[in-house]
Image (cartoon, rainbow over all chains, first blue to last red; front, top):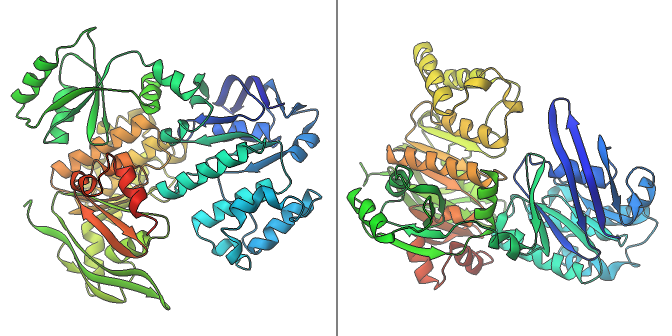
Length: 300
Length: 242
């Protein structure tokens, strides 16, 4: 009764937005679609919420077929699109009331479901939605997507452009919603958020690179990974780019993440090489790969 | 060169009615520095940047950008800085080449200079095959790399980057930062905002704005030591809710 997607393909003219996508989301699961802008995430959301018809393949949401039973799906799902799409000139309260009425319910009936989120914007309930800050708009949109007690919740990039503190709060809200038996499909370009999902699909250029739990995805990383730092980041990147044994280098915060072409790498020799490039304060140590490392390795 | 201040801000404020969107901020940025300007949504970053790039007049305080006063010499500031943001960077319905030509013209480059820059840019970014395609047809990451290069067309002393990498894939995001390092290495000052805290680590110094004020300003290393955390993300989480 979650979501089932088999062999979905969708093209816009010559551009293939989704290419033979298949995956299942179990009931009650918090499932993440992780990928950059242009990966095809929004197209997939629009197909599953019955706003767009796929060229090929089948999909069901909450047990209903996206083509034959689209009306049942529309009553059973909540959808928060990436772009803010509430009525800007209605107030906070009017927006929520409007969405409740459309789905034949009332704010009172399902208040317990949105309470956690809605209390944070309730002090501003007479303010027009267009005048809210980004964080408040996001909370209102989520309240509106939930007010009819959907079985499945679709959230398309709910945290894009949102600061790290608000992002953290948003994910805490999602975890609480999940406990209320709502299946959640959420997309994000932030790889650190992937770790908070039960399972994730890494998606790029309309193709799924891998589906698994965050831990399993990270454990698939094929090579030993090293943190390297030195006095000059620019010089370090340049030196490592020119090093003949380099397999991959990517800046990662204060370190560079490095993998070596050889099966066993000689840390001392690498250090000597970097010193010969006039770098100082060189530190090299083994580190755990992150989902972002895995994504980049798969996307290469 | 390295020790010259190219941005000097002293007690700069902007009020909207009674509300202090920017509340007496002071800082300086040195030539060739990568300066990260962080803060939660609504902390006042955008209002501050608008004052620094000469499109919004401060309520009080002082600021000079590349030696020019934000009150009296706003037009000179605009000629000496580059700017790109996630929201607006290039014209979607012009081709790659047309965008370069257009912005070159706006920045007052000669036809000869524009022709040379256009060839250089297309080559450097590997855009030969799409040089005559509309910018709207490019992947976001390519657009952002092109937009950054275009913001440097007139060799500005400072470039302001407002969330330049939002939504960009992780590989391109890193290539983008390599371009930033290179520009800084060549002496261009970089003033950048981001919500990616790993990118905050790439900055020479970072400021964190909370409710209109700068609550912290230092190197990422010192900030982490001061707040006793391992990552800039944790520093941000400790500070940003005020």
